[in-house]
Image 1: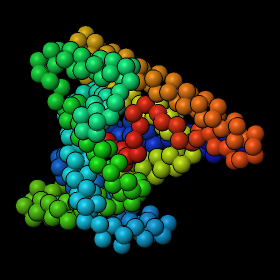
Image 2 (image 1 turned 135 degrees about the horizontal axis):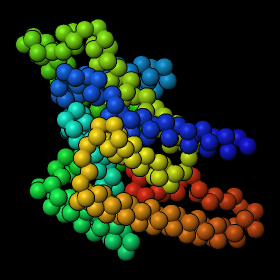
Image 3 (image 1 turned 90 degrees about the horizontal axis):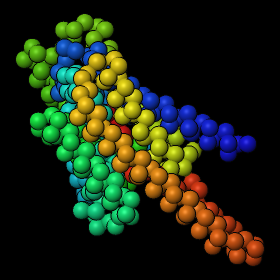
Image 4 (image 1 turned 90 degrees about the vertical axis):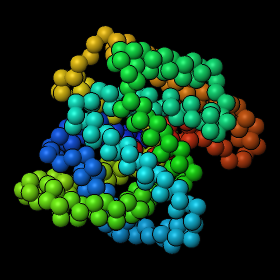
Length: 332
């Protein structure tokens, strides 16, 4: 019973995390007239404060001393911080400039880009269905490029920057809160310096916009940290295959908001491109679930003799791999 309750709680945490990431396009327009770079700087500064308080309450500071003695890891964190800054800034700009649907496409095709980078950079081998999914995704980009009259650069930059971030995060191998704290610490001084310069030049909106606007800018720290905490709670309670499916909630919500709330145009060629992306994702999901079932069945088959001999048996259900799932500090 306890295990079922834990999984149910994990599912709710996961839905909460990806649901909040999916609904965040409703928040960024509230911060106008602040520009994307100013919003990003506030997000970095206030996120460090929120995450720092969380780590203080949890008494999780031992990693700081260990990290300080690893220059290579610090360099990777700096790269991750830079890449996710590009991702965050472009996403905020896209939402506040009428490109919510195009931004959602970036997160839809991100699993395909992640797989392609695994092949090109890590020498990973793909199964036939995965090759077919990547090819279908490439065809979708071509269809959208023809429809737009140019490549969907917002979607592509978001997808490639987030895939690069995931790749670097995999090498860093840190927990969500710790990783976000380290990344925002790297960016804290540049972000604070930019905000101070903005204020000195008379272009800051933090105080000029009134107390309410200042509170909204400060709340960017909570908007960043709260979904991350929920994601961390989900990750330790449900299999990765479940998280792999839940990750599609965010772009689905973003896509729905783009059409129904922001009333962005969806001409036939855009529907055709999105349809191809969804077909590719369905192929990936089917292949991942089929592979997970086969792996589990094989583990049970190999474990049967050990169980008969009285040895402990582990089926590995908590470590099932989902469709293109990586541990990341997500967050558009």
